[in-house]
Image (tube, rainbow, N blue to C red):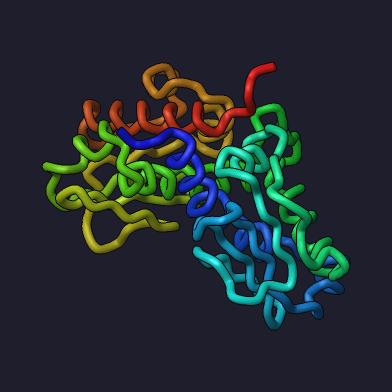
Length: 262
Protein backbone atom coordinates (compact mmCIF):
# COMPACT_ATOMS: atom_id res chain seq x y z
CA UNK A 1 0.00 0.00 0.00
CA UNK A 2 1.31 3.44 -0.93
CA UNK A 3 2.33 5.60 2.01
CA UNK A 4 -0.15 8.49 2.28
CA UNK A 5 2.45 11.06 3.32
CA UNK A 6 4.78 10.18 0.46
CA UNK A 7 1.92 10.02 -2.02
CA UNK A 8 0.80 13.47 -0.90
CA UNK A 9 4.38 14.66 -1.23
CA UNK A 10 4.51 13.35 -4.78
CA UNK A 11 1.40 15.36 -5.61
CA UNK A 12 2.89 18.43 -3.92
CA UNK A 13 6.10 18.20 -5.94
CA UNK A 14 4.67 17.15 -9.29
CA UNK A 15 1.14 18.59 -9.36
CA UNK A 16 1.13 21.69 -7.13
CA UNK A 17 4.63 23.11 -7.56
CA UNK A 18 4.28 23.10 -11.38
CA UNK A 19 1.43 25.58 -10.89
CA UNK A 20 4.14 28.11 -10.01
CA UNK A 21 4.82 28.31 -13.75
CA UNK A 22 1.16 29.07 -14.47
CA UNK A 23 1.12 31.74 -11.75
CA UNK A 24 4.36 33.22 -13.01
CA UNK A 25 3.12 33.48 -16.60
CA UNK A 26 -0.13 35.13 -15.50
CA UNK A 27 1.55 37.75 -13.29
CA UNK A 28 2.02 40.96 -15.23
CA UNK A 29 2.37 43.24 -12.22
CA UNK A 30 5.03 45.98 -12.13
CA UNK A 31 6.77 44.20 -9.24
CA UNK A 32 6.93 40.98 -11.23
CA UNK A 33 8.43 42.81 -14.21
CA UNK A 34 11.01 44.40 -11.91
CA UNK A 35 11.94 41.08 -10.30
CA UNK A 36 12.24 39.37 -13.69
CA UNK A 37 15.74 40.84 -13.99
CA UNK A 38 16.97 38.58 -11.19
CA UNK A 39 17.78 35.02 -12.25
CA UNK A 40 18.53 32.13 -9.94
CA UNK A 41 17.55 28.70 -8.57
CA UNK A 42 15.39 27.98 -5.53
CA UNK A 43 15.46 24.44 -4.14
CA UNK A 44 12.86 22.85 -1.85
CA UNK A 45 13.86 19.43 -0.52
CA UNK A 46 13.54 16.90 2.27
CA UNK A 47 16.79 16.91 4.24
CA UNK A 48 19.00 13.86 3.75
CA UNK A 49 17.03 12.56 0.76
CA UNK A 50 16.79 13.09 -2.99
CA UNK A 51 13.18 14.20 -2.63
CA UNK A 52 12.64 17.72 -3.86
CA UNK A 53 12.01 20.11 -6.71
CA UNK A 54 13.56 23.39 -7.75
CA UNK A 55 12.57 26.58 -9.51
CA UNK A 56 14.79 27.98 -12.25
CA UNK A 57 14.25 31.67 -12.97
CA UNK A 58 16.01 32.66 -16.18
CA UNK A 59 15.50 35.43 -18.74
CA UNK A 60 12.09 36.31 -17.34
CA UNK A 61 10.84 32.71 -17.47
CA UNK A 62 10.34 29.99 -14.89
CA UNK A 63 10.81 26.23 -15.05
CA UNK A 64 9.90 23.79 -12.28
CA UNK A 65 12.14 20.71 -12.27
CA UNK A 66 12.14 17.59 -10.13
CA UNK A 67 15.13 16.43 -8.06
CA UNK A 68 18.07 18.14 -6.41
CA UNK A 69 20.02 21.00 -7.99
CA UNK A 70 23.82 20.86 -7.38
CA UNK A 71 24.18 24.53 -6.41
CA UNK A 72 20.93 26.42 -5.76
CA UNK A 73 20.98 30.08 -4.80
CA UNK A 74 18.32 29.51 -2.14
CA UNK A 75 17.74 26.13 -0.48
CA UNK A 76 14.86 25.37 1.87
CA UNK A 77 15.36 22.06 3.71
CA UNK A 78 12.41 20.33 5.37
CA UNK A 79 12.76 17.88 8.23
CA UNK A 80 10.52 15.29 6.59
CA UNK A 81 8.03 14.93 3.75
CA UNK A 82 5.11 15.78 6.02
CA UNK A 83 6.86 19.02 6.96
CA UNK A 84 7.10 19.97 3.29
CA UNK A 85 3.51 18.93 2.60
CA UNK A 86 2.30 21.28 5.32
CA UNK A 87 3.64 24.31 3.43
CA UNK A 88 1.26 23.54 0.56
CA UNK A 89 -1.75 22.15 2.43
CA UNK A 90 -2.41 24.84 5.02
CA UNK A 91 -0.44 23.33 7.90
CA UNK A 92 2.70 24.44 9.71
CA UNK A 93 5.86 23.59 7.74
CA UNK A 94 8.67 21.83 9.60
CA UNK A 95 12.10 22.91 8.42
CA UNK A 96 15.15 20.70 8.73
CA UNK A 97 17.72 23.37 9.48
CA UNK A 98 18.55 26.90 8.46
CA UNK A 99 17.64 27.85 4.90
CA UNK A 100 20.51 28.82 2.62
CA UNK A 101 20.73 32.03 0.62
CA UNK A 102 17.90 34.07 2.13
CA UNK A 103 20.03 37.15 1.59
CA UNK A 104 19.11 36.84 -2.10
CA UNK A 105 16.11 39.06 -1.44
CA UNK A 106 14.80 39.45 -5.02
CA UNK A 107 14.68 35.66 -5.42
CA UNK A 108 13.12 35.25 -1.99
CA UNK A 109 10.41 37.78 -2.88
CA UNK A 110 9.72 35.85 -6.09
CA UNK A 111 9.17 32.68 -4.08
CA UNK A 112 6.95 34.43 -1.54
CA UNK A 113 4.83 35.91 -4.33
CA UNK A 114 4.33 32.45 -5.82
CA UNK A 115 3.43 30.89 -2.47
CA UNK A 116 0.92 33.67 -1.86
CA UNK A 117 -0.50 33.02 -5.31
CA UNK A 118 -1.15 29.40 -4.39
CA UNK A 119 -3.41 30.56 -1.56
CA UNK A 120 -6.06 30.95 -4.26
CA UNK A 121 -6.39 27.15 -4.12
CA UNK A 122 -7.46 27.17 -0.47
CA UNK A 123 -11.12 26.24 0.03
CA UNK A 124 -11.78 29.33 2.17
CA UNK A 125 -10.61 31.70 -0.60
CA UNK A 126 -13.68 32.69 -2.61
CA UNK A 127 -12.84 35.44 -5.11
CA UNK A 128 -15.72 37.52 -6.43
CA UNK A 129 -13.92 38.87 -9.48
CA UNK A 130 -14.91 36.74 -12.53
CA UNK A 131 -11.34 36.60 -13.86
CA UNK A 132 -10.02 35.39 -10.51
CA UNK A 133 -12.75 32.76 -10.29
CA UNK A 134 -11.84 31.52 -13.75
CA UNK A 135 -8.15 31.46 -12.82
CA UNK A 136 -8.94 29.41 -9.69
CA UNK A 137 -10.88 26.93 -11.83
CA UNK A 138 -7.94 26.67 -14.24
CA UNK A 139 -5.42 26.06 -11.44
CA UNK A 140 -7.57 23.37 -9.83
CA UNK A 141 -8.30 21.69 -13.15
CA UNK A 142 -4.61 21.57 -14.06
CA UNK A 143 -3.69 20.34 -10.58
CA UNK A 144 -6.37 17.68 -10.28
CA UNK A 145 -5.77 16.06 -13.67
CA UNK A 146 -2.04 15.93 -12.98
CA UNK A 147 -2.68 14.62 -9.44
CA UNK A 148 -4.88 11.82 -10.81
CA UNK A 149 -1.93 10.69 -12.89
CA UNK A 150 0.44 11.00 -9.93
CA UNK A 151 -1.95 8.98 -7.77
CA UNK A 152 -1.52 6.16 -10.26
CA UNK A 153 2.25 6.58 -10.69
CA UNK A 154 2.73 6.83 -6.94
CA UNK A 155 1.28 3.37 -6.37
CA UNK A 156 -2.23 4.00 -5.05
CA UNK A 157 -3.68 0.50 -5.19
CA UNK A 158 -7.23 1.46 -6.14
CA UNK A 159 -6.10 3.83 -8.87
CA UNK A 160 -3.57 1.30 -10.19
CA UNK A 161 -6.22 -1.42 -10.34
CA UNK A 162 -8.62 0.95 -12.11
CA UNK A 163 -6.11 1.90 -14.80
CA UNK A 164 -4.49 -1.52 -15.25
CA UNK A 165 -6.93 -3.09 -17.71
CA UNK A 166 -8.03 0.00 -19.59
CA UNK A 167 -7.16 0.46 -23.27
CA UNK A 168 -6.16 3.86 -24.58
CA UNK A 169 -8.75 6.26 -23.13
CA UNK A 170 -9.04 10.02 -22.68
CA UNK A 171 -10.80 11.57 -19.71
CA UNK A 172 -11.42 15.18 -20.66
CA UNK A 173 -12.57 18.13 -18.55
CA UNK A 174 -13.55 21.43 -20.11
CA UNK A 175 -15.54 24.55 -19.36
CA UNK A 176 -18.14 25.50 -21.96
CA UNK A 177 -18.10 27.38 -24.17
CA UNK A 178 -14.42 28.38 -24.37
CA UNK A 179 -13.03 28.08 -20.84
CA UNK A 180 -10.09 26.12 -19.41
CA UNK A 181 -9.60 22.46 -20.29
CA UNK A 182 -7.38 19.59 -19.17
CA UNK A 183 -7.28 15.83 -19.54
CA UNK A 184 -5.78 12.58 -18.31
CA UNK A 185 -4.87 9.78 -20.69
CA UNK A 186 -5.05 6.17 -19.44
CA UNK A 187 -3.48 3.27 -21.32
CA UNK A 188 -2.71 -0.18 -19.91
CA UNK A 189 -1.94 1.03 -16.40
CA UNK A 190 -0.03 4.11 -17.51
CA UNK A 191 -1.30 7.66 -17.18
CA UNK A 192 -0.38 11.09 -18.45
CA UNK A 193 -2.07 14.44 -17.98
CA UNK A 194 -2.12 17.52 -20.17
CA UNK A 195 -3.58 21.00 -20.53
CA UNK A 196 -6.19 21.91 -23.12
CA UNK A 197 -8.16 19.52 -25.32
CA UNK A 198 -6.73 16.18 -26.40
CA UNK A 199 -7.09 16.27 -30.19
CA UNK A 200 -5.89 12.90 -31.44
CA UNK A 201 -9.01 10.96 -30.48
CA UNK A 202 -12.43 11.53 -28.99
CA UNK A 203 -12.66 11.36 -25.18
CA UNK A 204 -13.99 8.23 -23.53
CA UNK A 205 -15.47 10.45 -20.82
CA UNK A 206 -15.95 14.19 -21.20
CA UNK A 207 -16.95 16.31 -18.19
CA UNK A 208 -18.32 19.49 -19.72
CA UNK A 209 -18.86 22.17 -17.09
CA UNK A 210 -21.65 24.67 -17.62
CA UNK A 211 -19.57 27.83 -17.63
CA UNK A 212 -17.13 28.97 -14.98
CA UNK A 213 -19.79 28.96 -12.28
CA UNK A 214 -20.68 25.34 -12.96
CA UNK A 215 -17.00 24.38 -12.81
CA UNK A 216 -16.48 26.48 -9.69
CA UNK A 217 -19.24 24.65 -7.79
CA UNK A 218 -17.63 21.28 -8.47
CA UNK A 219 -13.89 22.05 -8.43
CA UNK A 220 -13.73 24.83 -5.84
CA UNK A 221 -16.76 24.07 -3.66
CA UNK A 222 -16.60 20.24 -3.91
CA UNK A 223 -20.13 19.74 -5.14
CA UNK A 224 -20.55 16.05 -5.94
CA UNK A 225 -20.73 15.08 -9.58
CA UNK A 226 -24.11 13.32 -9.30
CA UNK A 227 -25.81 16.43 -7.90
CA UNK A 228 -23.91 18.68 -10.31
CA UNK A 229 -25.08 16.59 -13.26
CA UNK A 230 -28.69 16.58 -12.08
CA UNK A 231 -28.67 20.36 -11.60
CA UNK A 232 -27.03 21.13 -14.92
CA UNK A 233 -23.59 22.20 -13.70
CA UNK A 234 -21.98 19.34 -15.65
CA UNK A 235 -22.94 17.54 -18.84
CA UNK A 236 -21.36 14.10 -18.90
CA UNK A 237 -20.56 12.52 -22.23
CA UNK A 238 -19.46 8.90 -22.10
CA UNK A 239 -19.56 6.22 -19.43
CA UNK A 240 -21.33 7.35 -16.21
CA UNK A 241 -19.65 4.51 -14.30
CA UNK A 242 -16.14 5.61 -15.23
CA UNK A 243 -17.02 9.26 -14.71
CA UNK A 244 -18.13 8.31 -11.19
CA UNK A 245 -14.79 6.61 -10.57
CA UNK A 246 -12.92 9.73 -11.66
CA UNK A 247 -15.10 11.76 -9.30
CA UNK A 248 -14.26 9.46 -6.40
CA UNK A 249 -10.52 9.75 -7.07
CA UNK A 250 -10.86 13.53 -7.31
CA UNK A 251 -12.47 13.61 -3.87
CA UNK A 252 -9.68 11.43 -2.48
CA UNK A 253 -7.07 13.87 -3.74
CA UNK A 254 -8.96 16.85 -2.34
CA UNK A 255 -9.12 15.13 1.07
CA UNK A 256 -5.36 14.54 0.98
CA UNK A 257 -4.69 18.22 0.30
CA UNK A 258 -7.21 19.80 2.67
CA UNK A 259 -5.81 21.85 5.58
CA UNK A 260 -5.61 19.78 8.79
CA UNK A 261 -8.61 20.10 11.08
CA UNK A 262 -7.99 22.08 14.28
